[in-house]
Amino acid sequence: MMEKRNYRKTLKFYQKLLQKEKRNKGSEVKTMLSKLRGQLEEMKSKVRFLGLVKKYLQVMYAERWGLEPCALPVIVNITAAHCDTLDFSPLDESSSLIFYNVNKHPCSGRQKARILQAGTPLGLMAYLYSSDAFLEGYVQQFLYTFRYFCTPHDFLRFLLDRIRGALARAHQDPTSTFTKIYKRSLCILQAWVEDCYTVDFTRNTGLLGQLEDFISSKILPLDGSAEHLLGLLEVGMARRAEGTPRGADLEDMKEAEEDTRPFNTLCKRFSEDGISRKSFPWRLPRGNGLVLPHQKERQYTIASALPKPCFFEDFYGPYAKASEKGPYFLTEYSTHQLFSQLTLLQQELFQKCHPVHFLNSRALGVVDKSTAIPKASSAESLSAKTCSLFLPNYVQDKYLLQLLRNADDVSTWVAAEIVTSHTSKVNLLSKFLLIAKSCYEQRNFATAMQILGGLEHLAVRQSPAWRILPAKIAEVMEELKAVEVFLKSDSLCLMEGRRFRAQPTLPSARLLAMHIQQLETGGFTMTNGAHRWSKLRNIAKVVSQVHAFQENPYTLSPDLKLQSYLKQRIARFSGADISILAADNRANFHHISSEKHSRKIQDKLRRMKATFQ
Image (cartoon, rainbow, N blue to C red; front, side, top):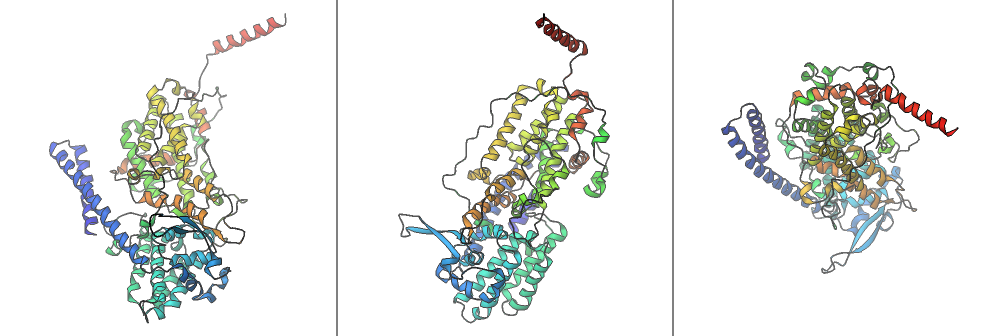
């Protein structure tokens, strides 16, 4: 904890020196910055190592209370009478869990290993108590996917029933099976609260109150060590009240929060068999640019194409009260400055999302929009014909729609800045292409794909500026398309290679949702009613990337003034009709002089007349 605190203080001091170095370029500041960089890297590696050691010890503590498969029926039958409302199938392990055997470690004594293939809801919950459930990642995968077959209320009732049935007998014999059931139940509760507080407890005060009352009235009188669970709930409520994004380290957070970091994040196990970094060719053969014929001019104005103005002061804070700049501010800042602040704005939104937000997205009306930029309202439209994959009485959080709406707004802003510009569009196209190039090179794929979406708008692609764009800049567009193909090719492509896992990454929210939708296609249950755990496990592996990327944020220096300008411009064009904006500016189309056009028509008429003679 002290190492973390020292690292945060040193990082803040480094950022202050960085700002000072930009204002006053002195040799002393540069020398101090170079020394601080080395110290920061050393401190960061030390904090990361100590964090991993702490998580490993916590996982080993949880595994201490694991049960052998032969003891799992005890979990089911300990208080079976309380589970009647869940309509669970037979209560013996052979019928509630289905395994298949695989050859593993042929040189060792263990010739075969059992892999869970399917199970009833009660069987899958009972398997949380098996040995190696934490270490092999089953607990985390379950916490991400249990909403497909069980509600949070049912899951909490299951855990509390196990605790209620084992609590009294656990203190009679510390080495008994009931002690293991009780201790493992507390570990599962801790992992659930740490990883899923925002999606299961924040919006469900009844669930939170039930857990708090049970801990206070039933557990604490007999076991004071469970008080740390109440501390976890208090920290979660404090984060909710302050609007703290997940993974944020606030210096004024109480010390209890430092001890309640998720420990089951160590259990994120991705399939590493044969994984190696793909040598992906970023550059593809250049294709022909899309040039549309000249459209008939319509009497529209820019004002008619824009939505009603909003009040930026209420939403963006005091910096928004500054005078709003036009599109010329893009030329006043370097590519790196714009990339940095767009990345920080995107990271702020991404840090607030949760892996569960990406599940069941088809029921929220999320579809693949790989061509035209939709209006902002279309992202919120729900498909009445699409059935939810979650249980009917589960209310799903719709934060994913906010992420996608922001992505659409950034794409619309990029297209609008280009089509409304009355200056050289070549410079503006070059600026956005270089920003997108910096984004994908620094693994900010979210903003890179948003800029690509704006540049691929039909009204932008038909601009004459593409013809006179320098060849090296035009190649960036092909690279962006190649990156998009790469991101669509494999759901785990961003996790390949250990060196790249430790780098900050912002994935494209829409592409990630599309990958998960593809995995969700098909049935979740077998003919005997058991749920396919192999399918749920694959979904959990893909969606686990969200937490993995959130643990390695960008440490760029914020520029609140520039961020305010960017927010204002993005909000100004939110929901705008790009086609109408383009029609108001003649520079967006190819023009043919009237004399030349009439001469071509006369030549065609003359040739046609000659054919009839």
